[in-house]
Image (tube, rainbow, N blue to C red; front, side):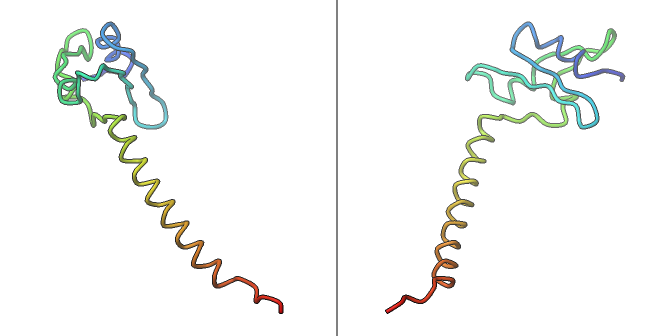
Length: 102
């Protein structure tokens, strides 16, 4: 089955804001949906792969990622990481503090 992200994007662009990417790395299609459509429902959308083949998005998508959900997880991980760095900096500052002069 020969297809391209740009061709698959044609099936979605009348319903959503989309942007396809291809090149040296893995191909991707960014789809901006409303809050009522989750990644499972998006996977059920019928798309055209080429002139002869129609299937659901989940049949051909390597992965469907909810970027809003991923952003929340990322922000929690980043805050936890920054808190650990700050804690380690406080410990190392005590170790390297110059002796006080009398």
